[in-house]
Image (cartoon, rainbow, N blue to C red; front, side, top):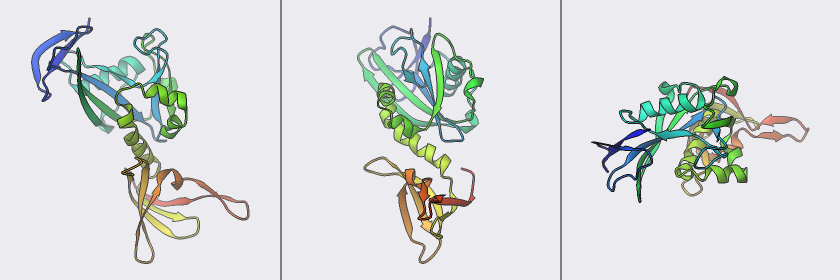
Length: 246
């Protein structure tokens, strides 16, 4: 039996508790955490829910669950990852990516979506059998290109809002700040990455290291592309010369 703490609309503990499965009282909320991971390649970690897991059995999802009585968001993030995936999240490289709050009939909740930067091989994970049957690291853009995977993850309440930020942080790993040389010879400095205000596409913000030092933007998906030269050689569009840690 799980016991949950209840919060008010200002995220203050009320001193009340409830049992999982009971309706959440009106004006009260319980705390949920979901955990997104990114490794050094910019890949995110997905888990496939157990075939008998309810709700939403046998679909790809992410680590997460409800905080138990006495737990804060940080502690719930650690426990859920350890229970479901069998490893301890590196909370030194973690932050709350977004928070949402909703009150539906019998289901008021506050949700923290954590983002953790960590490299853990799939073979090193020990999944909780009643919760998880499989796992994989995958680039966010491959999720977007797979209709079925996109549909499954779209069933998560927070996914649509969080996904652009996951893509942005993934690209920040793959395109760190620093100096790059374009295949035609000019040099540029990557200042940062940002989301396009209309399309939510990750964009590289960079400055020319020649002329008047104009600022430019370019879709991040183009930055690491390979270009075929007239002589048939394949080269990177931008080659890193000096980059720093993010």
